[in-house]
Length: 119
Image (tube, rainbow, N blue to C red; front, side, top):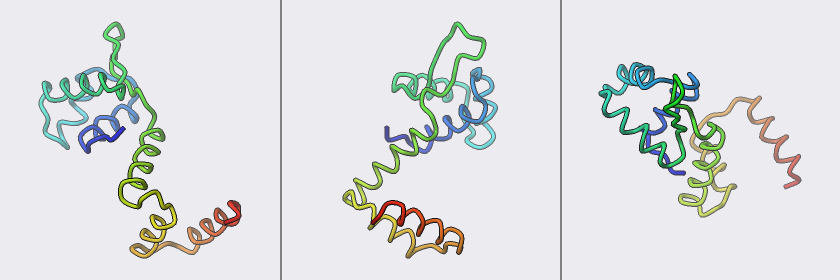
């Protein structure tokens, strides 16, 4: 899937708002991105061609998410794991744990997950 940061921004609007008009997407993104109506329109149509956005001009709100947030997250995790960590989930988790602090509750949750996996 490999979405850009800009594509993520568009998708966040569609996931949060549901089906939208072009104006609604423009309004949501103009404050944070400063994008013009033409820029948003171009993104929506390009993302429609990729299957990320569903475009149905017969609807009052023609733009909606073509994929779920979880599908995108899963694809990004898979890409990161493969590209950066050579497919090693253990190396990925170890790197995150070495570079950040987790709460005791998060630690217990991780232990439970590992125990359930019988690793």
